[in-house]
Image (cartoon, rainbow, N blue to C red):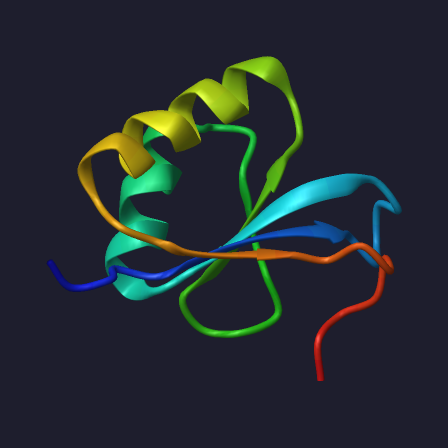
Length: 80
């Protein structure tokens, strides 16, 4: 099965809260329908989802059905 996007745990540079960054056209479309609190990132096909219990449940629904590449950012900096 083909990956539909990426999932990364990041420190959002504007809100300064830990959030989930999801990229990929299909993944962004899915999560945007499931999580109304999500906001669009700086790049095309990128969405930022707040780290909440409800958001994680919705992300898990997608992960159970579709593969995403997962990145864990332990340093609180954006990847270059």
